Image 1 (cartoon, rainbow, N blue to C red):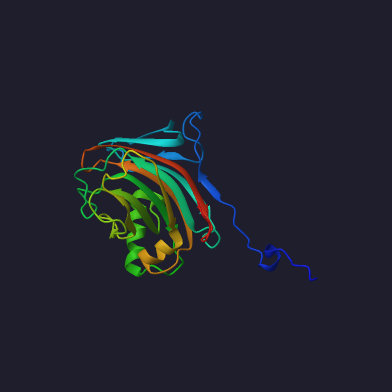
Image 2: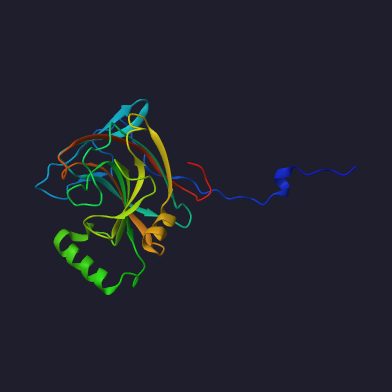
Length: 239
């Protein structure tokens, strides 16, 4: 009688990439855990406040914005060829009432997750390179080659792409919209390498930073949001 091999022995070995954790928070920590820091983009605008807390059983960052804006940010160096998918959890108390991502006056978000990128040399046109040089002369190297914002919007359909009202080097993607899921944790998963190609028409060189924010300086509103469990995983792997 022939001896049958286990099914696993007949299948090719599958190598799974280990998750790369970039935002796992512990409420017992004093202050924000390194390398996270608050980045105030405009000294004339009050900063959004951030604190660590346990929120409905989730160890998280709470962002509280009152006519304010500041990023909670950290640098990244992620191999997008191996782990191109960003997973995270977030929540909002409510969407903003008067925000409108198509205008500068409405460029506010109850919650946003921001990724900055380097692009391959020679990819931006001359006009874009000159604009980036000017922007960096005014604001320093914090101005990236390109950026994607995943936003919790108040009016546009999920999946909508929109250039940022201040710069077409930043693209906004509506990840959630409206109040239907407000007040609860929502799990997210995005292939950021694929999203970058959709937004800019080519692959990024590398992802250089991650930030989160509640942003209400333009509309003058108040927002509260939570963020947790940021990690990068393989393209075909679950969060």
